[in-house]
Image (cartoon, rainbow, N blue to C red; front, side, top):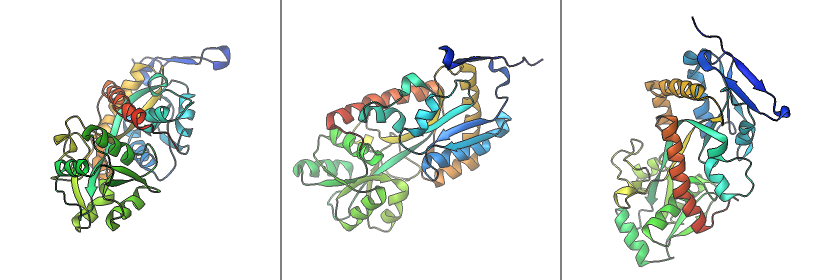
Length: 318
């Protein structure tokens, strides 16, 4: 006989904002996934997962859009730790506090990583006129021309900005940042020869590489990426280099382990489906998965690695 779910919640107004759940029959009502504004990568991923979770959970899963920046995490951090309010977010959750004062949460203190769903690598790309064929060539050229070369970048703290600054730090080169209003204009600037290098997602540069208007040198992931077959990694030249944009599902701190593990198992089943993998791949991201502990470890590693870059360069959220 299945055990009856017991929920004992003490209201925050009484001084204890804690909900203890015996999770044998979780969930017994709809689950919501809070994420950023409609139309973005997090929204797409959250909706794709939410559409396929009810089969395993036996309950409706609703996506709730709360805008970008700090809004979605700020709403999520105040939710009861009962597994019915989750957050789908990317590295902004743990890197923004390193670039902005008074962020109303701490990723490691206030959230439990449930599962790393996908990662998005960037592609180190150059203008065809640049006399380089490999990452090693680019580093040699940059060292020969300190401060003369440049790269296109989006907003401070964006994936292509951090990828480039980590590269500069590890390669010990001086390549000047040129800021554009988003990745699209930055790629156009690269094609026109206005800048010489860029770190951009595969989908934004792949057609131009095929047409010969751009030259791809390497991918920023630790291992070769199926998103850009045959392309070597930057890590092959700079051991230890990795700069990808991870995103996944989080629960408020103190959510019971049994609930977190159940969610991890059900989302893992969704990510293992070939049709789900294909849809993610077509959108330019790679499915990862793994345990809550592996996701937490990855976050800590990125905070250490990117945190050093952010501090050394003095990156602040604009």
